[in-house]
Amino acid sequence: MTFSSLAFFIFFTIVLVATTLTKSRKLRHIILLLASYVFYGWWDWRFCFLMLVLTVVAYISAVQIDKRQNNRLYIIIGVIVPLIILGIFKYFNFFVSSFARIWGITTGSSLTIILPVGISFYTFQSLSYTIDVYRKKLIA
Image (cartoon, rainbow, N blue to C red; front, side, top):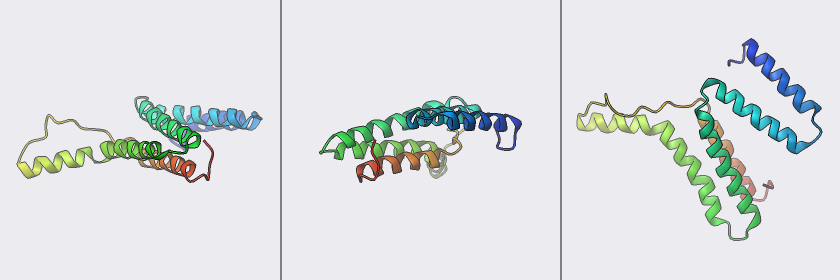
């Protein structure tokens, strides 16, 4: 779904009306979260699982950081896991092709990972949420 398509206009209108008519802030956040998954899944539904993993890691890390005094483990998990996921999706093909070129190996049968659109943005949003909870700028 592109931003200039009729499908996006209809989708955006439905989401805008739903969030405007909703009084509860929590319900509004849920609507926006589900709308984000639908919008992202429109391109390729398999990447919704990637977003779900990033969402769950950020949420669980933030809740645990908010609850505990000794929250060093959860901030590490909340930062390292999204960076590992970003590294795999963004740099796997680069490292495989570089390694193959150095050693003179053909990469015809190697695994090629598709780079999801917006993975860097979503990863850094996840990181900033976890770090802001750790710094007590946000509550989980």
